[in-house]
Amino acid sequence: MRHFSWTGFAALGVALALGFGAVGVVAQDKEAQIQTRRDTMKRQGADFKAIQDYIKGEADQAAAAQAIADLQSIAPKIIDLFPPGTGMDAFPGKTGAKPEIWKEWDKFKAIPAALASEEQKLAAAIKSGDKAAVGAQLGDTGKNGCGACHTPYREKLS
Image 1 (cartoon, rainbow, N blue to C red):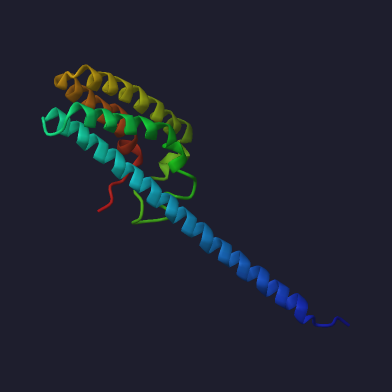
Image 2: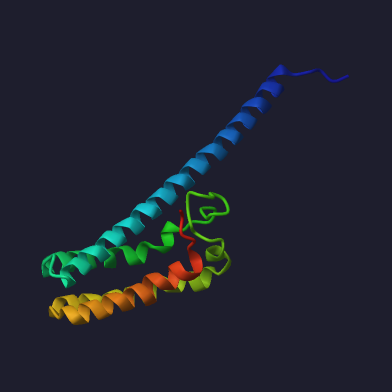
């Protein structure tokens, strides 16, 4: 005949509690990763605005140069902002990252290199001081860099 062990039962309870607690921590970590991603994208938007302000004569060339330098520092880190399990399917309303990102991971991973190439051209245009060239390249950077990701892989949140 088997004896009931409170110790075994208690150990099982603790293990279950820790397991469920770990799931909660993982969800919180993923939400923090989503927030970091969103903050980074907002920072990129602010950098784009600084460059637009330069084109319009509302900011100086140094501010535009600082903005492009910041953009260039972000591009290599973009892929790390999209760990698996942080898409809109897992966190509806908190992110617009479509599941297609992870289904087409190799294609998605190639986009930051294209963005970096566009940003290099933008940096050269800013350095030249030719605002018309900056404006044209800013448009290309938005279309071929940012848009290459946002169009297929992002759903705008309301």
